[in-house]
Image (tube, rainbow, N blue to C red; front, top):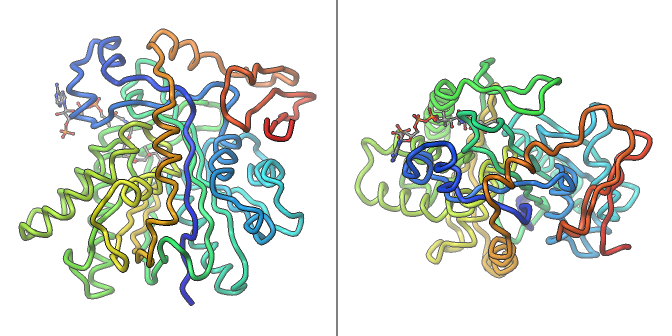
Length: 391
Ligand code: HMG
């Protein structure tokens, strides 16, 4: 049975900063952020958007009534969840009006967990061929103002329906994966910003890719020629490029050109959104699928998933007939164009204006946020979400 991604969509908040403005404010050469890091714009989340609302807004774009009737499993991958006990998937389940006879859970392993979610979904569909599984990957990346990681922040979510006979891309077997206990990036329970050993995280990421890519090729007796394009977890676009270049040293010119050209296409959305942690690899995939004009049905795409800490996986997907007709290219481009650029002064205020820990009652202004699904406040320590389409 063919199982894979039947639908895919993403959402990012309505505000962004230009990384040139951030460079100026931080006394850094703009070339470092634009070229050295490879980021153009960075999404900024207002406090009416959290990982739940970002994911639900992404899912709204892709779900039809038929999906709502058939989805029997919600797998919510996040490392910036909103409750230590209750799964973010349950909030999303309710906001999207999914049927009661569905499982809803939350899973975590840094930026890797959406891939775990897809593999769990694949197993579920293999056992229950009529099932449709909603996999949500949603995060707000925060390192702090004036930190080394600040330029690699972002916010957004990817929503995918995993089903049999997928319209977009199959998820092939085998895949190769590995775990290595490393402190390259982490976020203790008491902190709303990440801790990172930046240079070590870059080395760890590249080593994971080289090892897994070599293992995959050995296991499947494949070589660079067998991959039409490679997509990467993309904390910033120079990161995926560095990893790709690390395996192109001995490649022939045709393989080099093809893989580097497709990397340019795949990095486009990541460069103007920023790091969205769990959804980052899948945003790279969406960009490749929506922005390329030469990838044909049947092309094999290699996917590298990496989550600090660390767990990584390399696997492949095959593009399905007429996949282009099932993408949301226009809506996504429009959403990105409609975003409002804000000043660094305003970004700093928004960044600091978080809901203080322990606040049991607060009302938030949802009118200023154009998103259909928002966090409207907290009442008796219970988060209050609204879908404006249902008001
Ligand atoms: P840094 O020290 O600010 O930057 O840290 P740098 O000094 O290494 O410079 C970056 C690049 O800019 C260099 O190029 C410079 O040469 C270049 P490279 O050697 O890398 O090719 N540069 C310039 N280029 C053009 N014009 C100029 C110029 N000046 C310098 N004028 C670092 C950068 C990424 C380490 C930092 O931002 C950071 O710590 N970020 C957060 C960690 C991160 O994103 N790590 C990625 C791997 S780990 C991962 O992906 C997992 C993660 O998503 C979390 C999860 O799993 O949940 C993060």
